Amino acid sequence: MNSTGARIYQERAAEDAKVNAAAAGGRFVMDVDAMKSLLPDWQGIADKLGDMIPTAQQMRNISQPAADPGSTLQKQAADRHADAYIGSLTQQQAYAQGYADRLKQAIAQYEQQDQVNADGLGKQG
Image 1 (cartoon, rainbow, N blue to C red):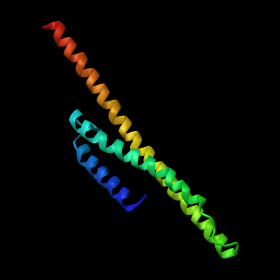
Image 2 (image 1 turned 30 degrees about the vertical axis):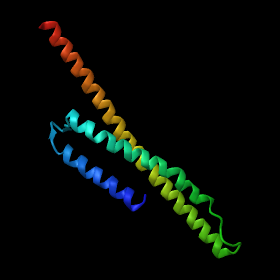
Image 3 (image 1 turned 180 degrees about the horizontal axis):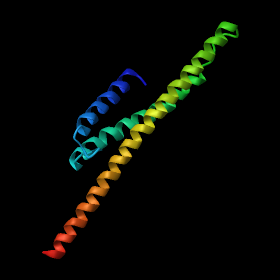
Image 4 (image 1 turned 90 degrees about the horizontal axis):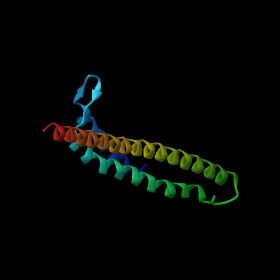
């Protein structure tokens, strides 16, 4: 990941750590407004990382400069670097997308329960 992507990723993780600091009963507690404010950020990170993967895959298409042993070793090293970079991007994208998906799921559950509660109050009132 480039330095900008890594910095954004680290900043978001730090923000999440602050939000999750309010732990109760061994669980992290986050109100729905915090989840809604974090969701676009995490989805944006996942999308940016996803967009970076095809570009990174192009690194494997670079030809070696010559047909000598040194160039062959250089190409092999470049390919290993490309594979490691693609693997890192893929792992980070999966993590960010998973976090965004869990936020979406938690928001939906909260809103569903909120509606059930509102309906219950309407029936009793």
